[in-house]
Image (cartoon, rainbow, N blue to C red; front, side, top):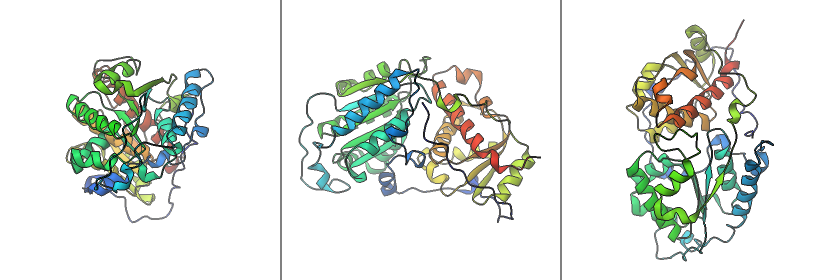
Length: 370
């Protein structure tokens, strides 16, 4: 399939800019109410719809997924959580939602990276007939951050009035967080909230998503009966028919582009990795607020797995916000060691490579090449 049309990217500024920004100089603080308000599809997926998802003709499961999800969205017109929706943003009041009807009230999209799961999940959010305040969309990490900010009971009350909750990249590699979110989803199902999810594979599973459905349904335990699994086959659309990752530029080219582009940041890559360790991943989105481009010098392999996983989160936030990335040093497909790419988090690392490569292509116009 193909995602929505290529992102528009800022034009380079040929004059003299005040000077590049620095991610390392930013230490954002994100209030809880912003976490709630931002539970919508990210900017990259603002305009996606089922009609903009272009199924690969060689992968019939993609067309079938669109058909099933369109029907699923249409069936959410009369959600059983309507009474709960009158409680207000944080669920105060005595209104009680009716129990959910029998049968699956959730869908799980099972497929490898780059087949368009997030595009379809966002399209489902847009197609569901409810006000934006009655629908929620976020990654697994963003959902756990919400629980951390509001507390478990408050999060249940906040989301119980929703018609739909979409969870992208359900993390199966942290047992504690999986149990926490599974408990949350159980309470929401009781309130009649419909669910939709995608997930990562468990550590040690090397099937590029082939085993994700089995893992997902097992990890959420008693909730498995509430999900219908949709398998989405295909190759990574970001690399389908496109060239390999662009070659990195020189430090001088990257620095010159950062200084000439209004709203661009400029950081040394190792220094940025160190800064990410001091900022909670829930704030990485806010870390990129207002940026038109991210410029990095001295890209090199990440030194350890903790650092690598933080970089994955930043790559996701940059990709969601369509922020082009211009870099010197090594190409992005050499960020992670062979050992990492064969380990339990390999799917995350390949996703990060895929997304950073796409953003590097977007950034090419920022450089004046001879």
